[in-house]
Every structure is written in structure tokens, then in C-alpha cells.
Image (cartoon, rainbow, N blue to C red; front, top):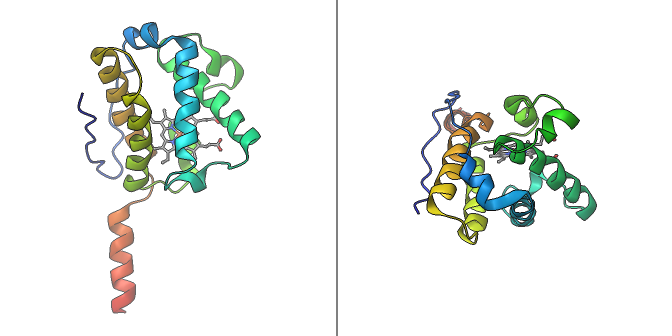
Length: 156
Ligand code: HEM
């Protein structure tokens, strides 16, 4: 399968579709827990590792918290809504400075774990499409603007 990543046009919040039921059917909740556990182990050692706690116990909390959302998003029990409340994608991520590059790093870590996951192409593609589109909502720093500011500062 092709883990295609398309460019975020800064400020856009494209519509997205949640993963198809086949994704959770094939992964199971335990499978998703393992997927996200492996994912965060890769993330903490990546270029965006600085966003996440390095302490193992704290990271366990992040894993547990996050997977609740993804199980719910995949059509499973509404664990996140019931225990945490309404999920706001932009609010959750606004405290971090997320560039398009950071988004691609995040997706790259996900590609690494998904490649090792033994589910059908249809299930994987459906999950990837959800992540690839919805992750555009997290980009809150305009790289091009930053670059322009840098050039202006140098020239000035
Ligand atoms: C489809 C893509 C994504 C989804 C659905 C998603 C979802 C979530 C959720 C559910 C949480 C936990 C919220 C809570 O604590 O209640 C979270 C936290 C977080 N996300 Fe994302 N996220 C996505 C992409 C990204 C990207 C691209 C980045 C950065 C490059 C990122 C960085 C973070 C960070 C730093 C946290 C906080 C971790 C902590 O609790 O210390 N996320 N995200």
C-alpha cells in the first residue's frame, strides 16, 4: 500500500471520514492498544520526541489516554467521551507548535508501525486516509511564514 501524504495548505481544516468498521474488526481493541504503544515508543525517539514525556510512567499515561480516543474514532466504545469528555482536535494541539514537517514526522512514525501490522489493505488504507486528512487539523505553525520572517530579519 501507498502511505501517501498530501500537503497541508496552512489554515485548512478539511473534512475527513472516520476509519471503516473493518479496521477495528481486524485490529481488535487489544491490537489497537499494542499499535499505539509501539507508535509512542517510536515517537519519543523521533524528531518530535520533545513534545512528549520521556518518563516511562508518564508516557504510559499518554498511551492509555490516546488509545481511548482512537478506539472510539474507529467505531468502538465511547471511552474517551465518557471518561475525558468532548475531544477538540485544535484545542488539544494548540499548546504545541506543530509545523507541516512535525505532522509528517508523526505520520512517518505511524507508517513504521502500520507496515508491521498484519491487517488487510482495505483496513489499513481506511485508517491511513483518516489520519492523513485529520492530522492536517493539528498544523498550527506556518513554516513558510516563519521562513519569510527569518529572511526579512537577516536582510534587515
Ligand atoms: C489524526 C491525527 C491525530 C489525532 C487524532 C491526535 C489525537 C490526540 C489525542 C486524542 C490526544 C490526547 C488528548 C487528551 O489528552 O485528552 C493527543 C495528544 C497529543 N498530540 Fe495528537 N493527534 C494527532 C496528530 C498529532 C500530531 C501530528 C502531533 C505532532 C506532530 C501530535 C501531538 C500531540 C501531543 C504532543 C499530544 C500531548 C501528549 C501528552 O499528553 O503529553 N498529535 N493527540
